[in-house]
Length: 246
Image 1 (cartoon, rainbow, N blue to C red):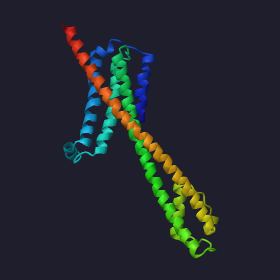
Image 2: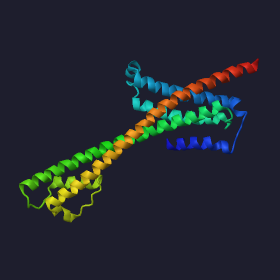
Image 3: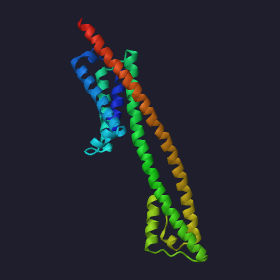
């Protein structure tokens, strides 16, 4: 996926080294244009209809999951944009062509960022909340033991050792074998520090998630502009093409 996105950007920058003014109107250029247009129009419409129209969702999701359709939408959009860039022959001379290409790249990039960064932020946020619940549970257990036995030394059972390994794995707390016999108060202090760090990390991820969600709004806005420009581009190509035969 990332490789295709990088290839798209490299092909777009090709206008710095290569230009072929006659290629867009050639047979090969026309086939690339039609292929790219179909990939940029059909899968996104299918995904939008499946996601928002109840009838389509009930019929299609019985055979194909919405997540699979979304992945098709992402892959086909990137491949379609690559075909569209090849179709241009790097002939960015008209304002319509320049704006159309710019909106296409922004639409693909915003969709990619919104899809993967938002998914990553949600996953990280969920994991850290689970870690926080684990730490809070263990902290409350230790406070209860301290209340019952203020001067007691901690002696871990098998379940406590499991929790300690989980903390080392998830949070990165470095505990030595000597910590197994550390005072309850020291254990509580270390857990409190870890809880504070996790709460700060959760707030940071929530902020990132909110910022990333804005990319979806940008994606929708750029998509609408792109499709409008694409319709004008196709209409002008057909109109002037038919006039050429006259």
